Length: 244
Length: 244
DNA sequence: GCTGATTATCGTCAGGCAGACGACTAAGAT
DNA sequence: ATCTTAGTCGTCTGCCTGACGATAATCAGC
Image (cartoon, rainbow over all chains, first blue to last red; front, side, top):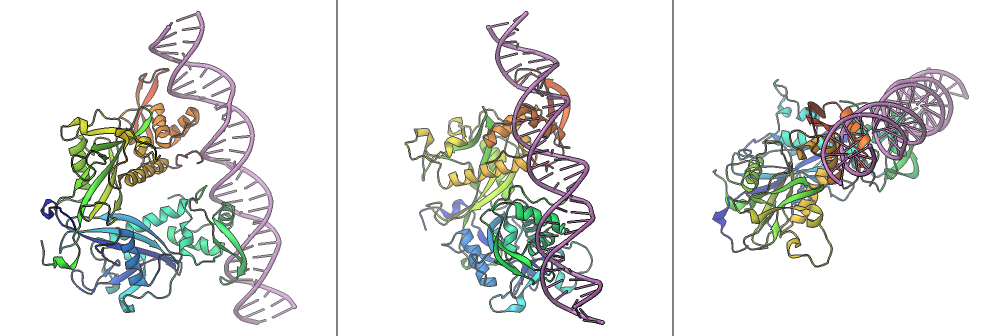
């Protein structure tokens, strides 16, 4: 690629790993794939792969996302860089620096992993990050590599980001109700929120929600107005996470 | 290092770049070094260098910081990972992925760069990021590589982080007055704050400041109480940046 | 159709915090 | 002595929040 002495610097492999989060059945879930080869063969891991020679980091993340889930980053989902992990021993094979990315997606149909659906699945983050020393059921072994740490950082990023940005709408379909948005906050934060105060807050924050005019009863009960995400990205004032 | 096929992935060079910020003379300043070799020879750039084979990313950042400024990360300064930049064309020589780190430091004596003081200096970020098309004075040419972007991201991170964390104290010496802390906020945010409301706010936030008992008149006027940073890292309630 | 369960939505009220700003204090400078 | 500069303490008002009562509109079952 250039006149540069390759012995002047140590060579690294660079990968992207993906923390793909969604809300299903009132729980925050992450996408995991089963490793087909050593190390950590048979264990669950975050999806990811090598960055190619000619692509940017975010391009690599979007490509891996599409390959492993069929998700396009445009379709409502949100993709951002999370952090980079480069401990010299994080991969026993060689020196790998992994640029983790965070994806927030609406509840999706079943994931697919290169056509093999059994090797990819959604798992509640509470289960994935349970750090008890107890025996795990076979399906609940700790994640491979340092992926538990990466997932934990991603979850924490998501929790804090929906406070001051409108990103919680990325977990919702294109049209959603105030109640559905509230359940997103409740699942991500793991708390119960007062429906009346929540409704007042989100409908009073300019640019957060725009009514579509339609209504739905898909949640049961009285018909609820449908909204789309508004143009605002930063919420002012922010949503307040109940005291820790 | 391992039985792994090196042709299975493209090789990358991995570097750390440092956004070192401080407040001097009521202005937010960044540390820059003059490049001694092509590309961008003679231009100012952010300090940084290759990650070694056996060190973690944060270790590499701390080492570069010590090498280029003599600063130890422990001595009051704050070091955190900022973001990673990996555009395939960001370095014309080869494929380089740079893990940028953010350092917040108190106002220091003159920087040193490997003993050559003339090749390192503090510059106001307003000057470094001025994006006018006008001729720059020789000293104000744009930063090398994508370092203007990195610096901009670092400044934005610092601006938002002092809102909800106690990190503004990292810009202050070990003992400081409320007025000095207020001038940090004013310099980083580029706004004027009401001294009375600021005083009430910071002295009322538990864990933010602990009085040392001493006073000083180094800022002129009535003697002011001296404080140290308290144990709190997250401010609750946060400092509020005046409306944009 | 009536009843109860469920969800959505509107209103009220009290406490707390933030912005605006007056007043006073204690040092150095002229 | 007076001015200037900073620091510190109060007051007041408006807004936001949390707690919670009340009403509305649908569905499931009798």
